[in-house]
Image (tube, one colour):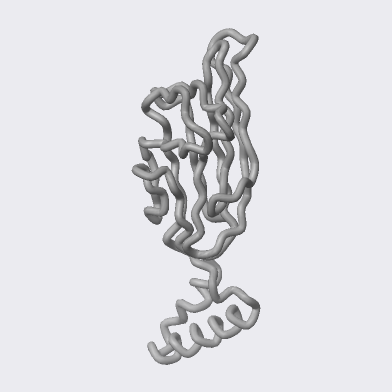
Length: 170
């Protein structure tokens, strides 16, 4: 905000003087490595699972089909894949709820490579046990991230919006 005030100028400056001052500030910021900082156009999404999933196959993509936020349109609720529109570090969180006697093990992958996992285990429990995992991932423009089952451990994931997948550019 102070940068915008500094560039705004005074009543005694001509439009050309304001543009020149802006270009000077921009050159300083560029020299400090801030040329790629974006102050607008946030990248963030929030999605949830509306249908209960049972007996998923090995490494099957978990598609969080209901999107409540998709700034930047980087999450595809048909494929379940987030595609980075810009280089940067992205923060992802996903929550899985299973049911008593079942389990649902997922992993987040970057371009098909394992990053970390989430183990929702309802064996020996009543109700709907829930677990959340988080990953910060450095991505290049066009890289893809998604949630998939780990091995054949996709027994039961509770639908009706109890399971979530969200992310944002940091």
